[in-house]
Length: 299
Image (spheres, rainbow, N blue to C red):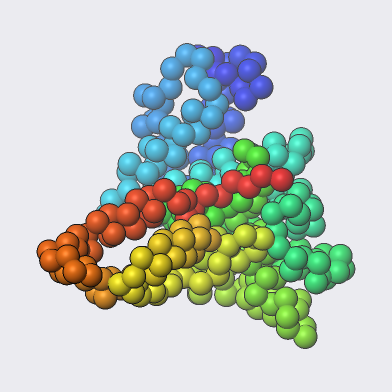
């Protein structure tokens, strides 16, 4: 059977290349085996299959094996997913060498590449301080994530710039830690402490921190509350406020109890009010139209 490489070349399927991922993905986990994974996934292989589709087949196979009796397949699926992220990052940074991606792509390289996206917290750290923090990063912490954690990172949090994935999970956590510690007297110490508790999953920051806690645009607040008064100005001002807050990543709790009820009098007109429902429908359309979660940035 032949496979299509990422550069378009056709080669014979080499099981040794697959086992470079399946063996470490199953290593140290009870109730799973790379032989079972390969056997189950192989039925999805077809002649000329793209190597990226082999990776997807392995991930999906491991994911489909997750059960109450064998939860560790979730960690296998996550590890395989992270291997795919590592390969993509090497392509983004044009790294040809094999080896630990966290040694090949340093924190400084990431900060430079994401310069047009990250907020000015980066400028508060010297190159020497960044180098110290780079030494703190522990790529093995990625192994703590199960499959849902991997998917949330990949789909919602890791930064994409002009269609390219530019951020590794531990770089994301370190950047968040640097952002939080930027005003401390000893920034490196506190960034390190924040990194340790977040990377070990002892503390998980709220979604806006993970999404926006290092980028130029976005709010680090999780939720907002507002109350709409029974006037046209208040209603339409609230629409704008809610749209901008949602765009920045915030969730909203909205009090509409002050809006007059269906059939109420407006001025001298009896039974004229349409009630709160038409305005709530508009709020719902705003929530659908404004993207809270876009992770792609333009220069």
